Amino acid sequence: MIHWLRNVGRATSTLASSMFVTLSTFLQTYRRKPFTTSFAYPEQPVPIRPRYRGYHRFDLTTCIGCDKCARACPVDCIYIDKEKAPPPAKGFMVTGFKIDYTKCMFCALCVDPCPVDCIFMGSNHDISCYTRDGCVVDYAKLPLAVAWGQDTLNPTAVHESKKISLPVWTKV
Ligand code: SF4
Ligand code: SF4
Image (cartoon, rainbow, N blue to C red; front, side, top):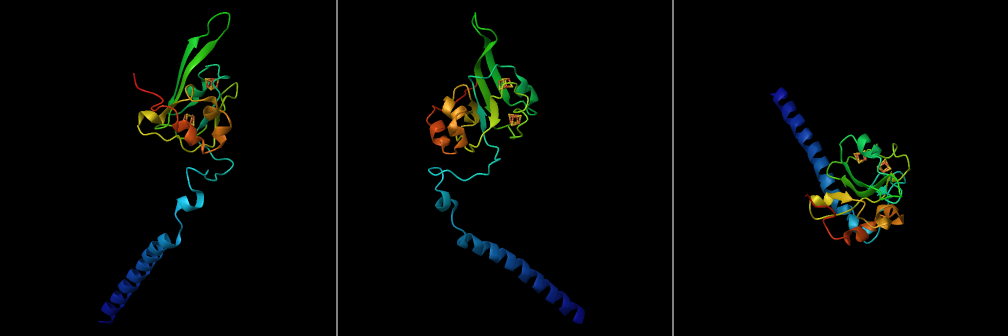
């Protein structure tokens, strides 16, 4: 009998302690302010850490189309289109620089091999889109301010990127 009562006591105290955790977490949701009241995202930028790895910054005007970033990417999510530059110019003309953000894992391995430093991880955390195809961002089609300029350091650049007609890339 004593053994049975001890088991009942243990079961009750275990249940009470687990319910305490559940109830305190439940009540926290009422104490915590909604995210939007703190930062009013997306109208106001959300503070991010200085070393945050967001969407890439890419400078089309400097890229030489060497494919080193694409070869370094472990998930093969960089697609580069290029044409021979018309004479007397030498080298390639980059006509498309697409990154598939359904595959990208923001590892930054594409950044180091670039010989001309034209690709970096930016601070923009949102290039919102309404379709899966829109997750493939063609940096060659983005305005330079969004792809490379100051806007890439500002999360509110999402406004600018949304002004681009979507999707930025369509399958052929
Ligand atoms: S961050 Fe990593 S996964 Fe994304 S494109 Fe660069 S190398 Fe590929
Ligand atoms: S490594 Fe740099 S220069 Fe070469 S294709 Fe990539 S972004 Fe362009």
